[in-house]
View (cartoon, helix red, strand yellow):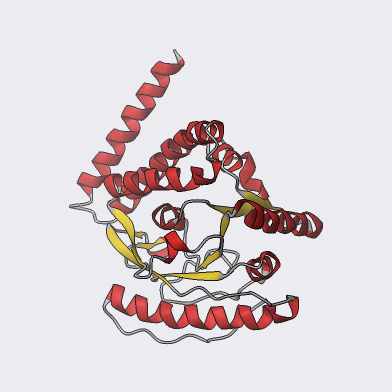
Length: 288
């Protein structure tokens, strides 16, 4: 009985999505809903796959590649169902050769989950809000694959989690990817929100480099406020690692500001290339 309901739901879901894609030739806004539906079902399927993949990889002694493996599945699923992907510009092969490290990137929308699927190197995990742990499938996968959960409402737990992350980085040579803006910008033009310092404290504490990863503003592909969701290929530039050897907590402010300025400059240039239009340079320097 349950399988019958599930089958009917999936058939109806796929039929509705395909129907909306067809309708978008007449009503362009229908593509927004179609790609949203395609994205959610792709995420759910890949997260469910991730639970089993994470268990298997843990059993064979390779839990550190769980998020890389599942991220790649989401990359291919989204290209197939929504026609969207992120393309890496990494001529020095930093993603595959710099380990461990703290990777940092700008945060625009929920589509950044796909960006991680395209970018993620092996032996890398994310940090996430503690509340995500309770989400079925996605939360299960994140827990099994080594995600570091931070409780932003509890400063002591956050400090403990950060200390645990630094230990994992050093002992397991496990990298971490963080969004220093702390939340999504949903911006139509290239901006960076003020940077929080947690990622930079973590890199200094662990003694590993910061690797900035800059994603072009992709409002031409997804702009939620304008109900725009198009197919497209979004460029990502991997910048040179910034060493932290010898730095202390007193150097974190300067490290944060330097990284943000580098990323902001690259963000404007990358977006101009991606969208084919000149961009105004926003305010350069702000951290929290």
